[in-house]
Image (cartoon, rainbow, N blue to C red; front, side, top):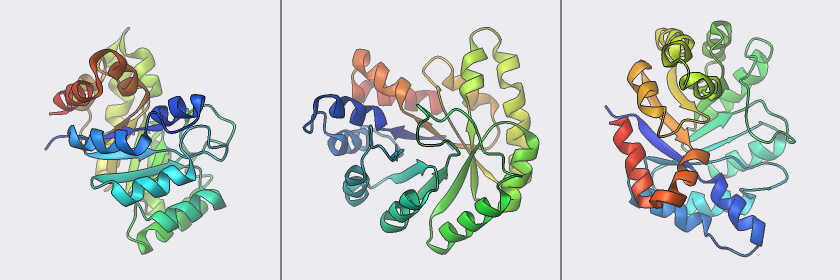
Length: 238
């Protein structure tokens, strides 16, 4: 089976917000990505709404027909939004509001009680849960103990080291994915995956179900066009 591609449209909202108004139109871009073959749409609303707004999430929830994934830190505002929209998947990230981008995974042992409560809350609402983690095996073990459905592997370190040594860059991710699969966890991945490093990653990670890609894909679309770029990423995942 092909690995699913979820397109993160945060950068479209960033561009729109830089000028005001509604150009580019986040909803239209999301619908176009679906039409071009994307398997899902991801958003990461932040408290300051510097890119995706609460209204964007509401608007998208009404029209996205593929998998809708909302990621964020589980404060009261985020949880209220997820409970209102009921996306297909909620991805929990540990970063506080001021962080520029998600750049670390959960300490799942330290936050086990919180993550367990959240996993149960989502399950009761029919929402698939995912926890953003690094490759530390203990964090994956405790993610499984929380009852979450999936993990999302933070692939920033892989992307940073891929060009110099692909085999070394992927090594810890293979171990992490194998353990996750053994523990019954689904496996997602995201952060700085690109046309350069995506194929090698998906070919070497057992059980990979889904990748979420935003910054690189939207940047590539400036050169290749959005339709062509979505198709280019999809071909790497086949």
